[in-house]
Amino acid sequence: MAREVDLFVIGAGSGGVRAARVASSHGARVMIAEEYRVGGTCVIRGCVPKKLLVYASRFGDEFEDAAGYGWTVGERAFDWPTLIANKDREIARLEAAYIANLERAKVEIVKSRAVIENTHHVRLTATGETVRAKYILVATGGRPHHGADIAGLDCVISSNEVFDLKEFPRRILIQGGGYIAVEFAGIFNGLGSEVTLVYRGDNILRGFDDDLRAHLRTEMEKRGIRIVTRQTVTGVERMEAGLCVRLSDNEQHTVDQVLFATGRKPNSQGIGLETAGVKLAPDGAIVIDGFSQTSVPHIYAIGDVTNRINLTPVAIREGHAFADTVFGGRPIKVDHTDVPTAVFSEPECGVIGLTEAQARAEFNRVDIYKSSFRPMKATLSGRDTRSFFKLVVDGTTGHVLGCHIVGPDAGEMIQLIGIAIKMNATKADFDRVMAVHPTAAEELVTMREKAASYVREAAE
Image (cartoon, one colour):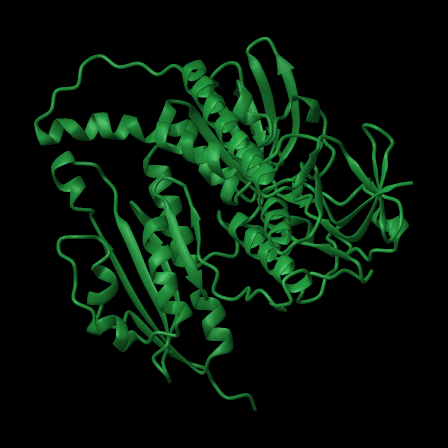
């Protein structure tokens, strides 16, 4: 006889762990299966280790800036193996904390791949055991996708392998233009690499506000990052001098490492979804309703495998809402509008709400407020950098529709601004707030003059 549980969770990433813990707190018997490491992409080889590497990459600037403030910094050197070893220890600590929290919540953890056999049965490949579950939750996240099959693809690494490189690459070429690509361009540039970023589109960070994209690109290029747009990598060959990378315009680069950050795909293959009758979108994403329920009534899915908004806090919120809905008697639909996000580039970006283009397409009147200035810290250090702030406002009601920031601590600022925008604050509400001086964030409440106003012409 198969063992029975109320909930079987496939995938112990941030979303799956939250769902399992909350469901258990509602009295459910819960089992969670993970074939790799507890913590998922974010904790093991994503947001957390990446932010640690971002911190490491910024110390070079601090050493240089110190001179303008009267400090003399002695001889300095960077050691990649020390950074990676310390990162590994912190990730191991976090994984242990995740495991402890699951055990404290009385969730049974199984180290195995899990395959759905039918609507209510899951097979553990490590043991062959079958478990019967009243409900199944799929939280398997996403996986790197390299795109077209090109010559030398076996020479390329993804964001999975980049955290475990044995040697620091003095020359690196990164293909991609999204979060991961621009973040690692900043990381390796800050640590001393010669960085080339190749992107097929017109500019980096597709989908972000155009002014933000242009400002960040300028700042990255000031730092010595070479950004090549409208090109793709067509081949990679291992040579004595390194990896020879050929681009679509036949330009060639010789580097020590090639990182592809060309997007991620839902990790939905090989876990029995088709067998169970779960409907998938053409890109492999699991099709769900507002309550994260799939086409099969007792099977649910959350996080990146559904390809809604692929951010860790979103997966956590979806997991919590699922558990409250199914086991807590409180039906909850997650609100996916106005989700704040940060790109830990250098300088970093913080964004919430509509871009200027999106607002102008949707609203009859749009007002734009912008500010660009040299950060106060850079005045004595002499660093050539500028911060950028932009508010997108409904010209009819005054509601702030979007906020876009490039500069130090942009991620911290956008989290707090997100509260105001989620509460439907107006530009007048912003203006009534006293400025905290001297700070960069005061720009948000002191921008008074419109940079532009747009009125949409009525359709004939």
